[in-house]
Image (cartoon, rainbow, N blue to C red; front, side, top):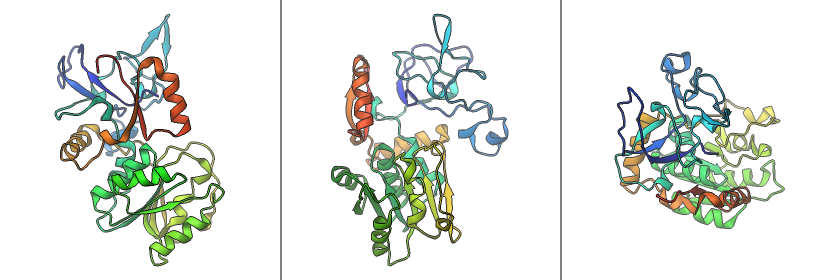
Length: 307
């Protein structure tokens, strides 16, 4: 929705010091005030003052105006425009060579390394092998998980997941919404114990509780896809001492995290170019959305003429 992007700085405002004209930058949606309760508590990604999804008010001083009307911009960025004006906190300078099309990956990767804090030698499951799921797989691999089980309806996506670090593969049945069959297969792969971590990456509300069914007692279930609809839970799934979290954007601290990602990318440990299955020009935007909804791409990217 234009909430991820990268480009070149064309102009800077008064007082901007972190970037100069001509710098290549990543855009990020974590724009913090540094003084609210959540910021001072180390959770800048959910800043109480500046976290407005559409950017229709509340101090969006970089608003986009058309015919005297303000246009809502996802997370204050508007990266589907040929040019956008953003706050200084929304840009991070790119100091390593990186394709613009490969520059935005935080949600899945951060859910594994920052939110769940996957431990070395642990066992994980990733439900759904789209863009978010593949980055969760990478996060689990880089943190040292020993077993990474992937679950998807598509044979092609399961095969693709191996490149990113998956070790075991389960082709799900579309009718098995309670994950009865998947749960049994996971138990067989974990000596009946269940997993340390499980991540839901499908955005399908019916699967919102699925990771709880796969983790062991006191395991961690992560809803990483951003489901916002009402979900019914069987409270028995929470026994015993299971933890269920719904992290936003990682959680991400861009000025700290993005340099780490660039370094991992430059070392060949974090696969980003391989995520982009298709690029589109701006006049192909309709086709890009059709492919997104059809699940054709792990990641599709809009490129402008001078990229």
